[in-house]
Length: 305
Image (cartoon, rainbow, N blue to C red; front, side, top):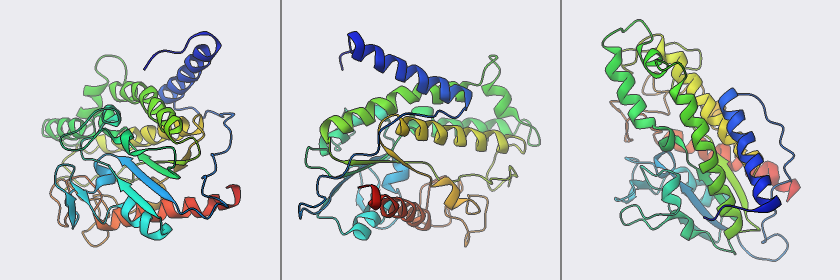
């Protein structure tokens, strides 16, 4: 994508700097963003054309029934449930396990570039991306490995801050311009669409407590990892705000159902799942909870459409 020049390029540069600064500092950015664009279907007797973009938290690996083996995509993930709840006319779910923002523009196995599914007639786009850009998988592996060295301390936090700065906070800040680029591309391809950025659900106890060995992290690393996820969600909310997109909080509605809870109560499976789901990912109840959060947001927004 060519860089902007002149006043337009300068404006984009200033916006990118503001987003990165907010992500680094964790501060609240009050964006003078315009209201979300109205779906072009309003008042035209046209049904909703819905496209879902995202990574494994969207696709629902392991949740029956798996509709696409390449992307570990379930037909009971939250986009599928939203499509039923909104009674959409057309629905295309191109979310794929392992996707980063790069897979919006490039193929992932048999999955075409995700943005190819977004067209001028698209009315609704949900986007849940950024976790793999930051490195969800490697973070879990690293922290689980380090926990054996100091199970009551915070070896993972110390490792990520050993260079004098928080590497995970920096990774989130570096992901912000990439998410920004994705949202600008969605708007360019579907200028009338309602664009909804979906945050990540609560993975670990919100009170900072731990549950070793069920979740094999050191005791004092739980608060650090919780705060890192909250920082990621804050970044997504801020980037949504400066891109005329809406943000759906799935963290709040899932507090109390993290991977440390008993099987009957948890909506996120631990590293050894008891319910059909990928490790450290939502199970069917978690996907239902995210779907409900999205549906609630879509209902709330009707008065502004």
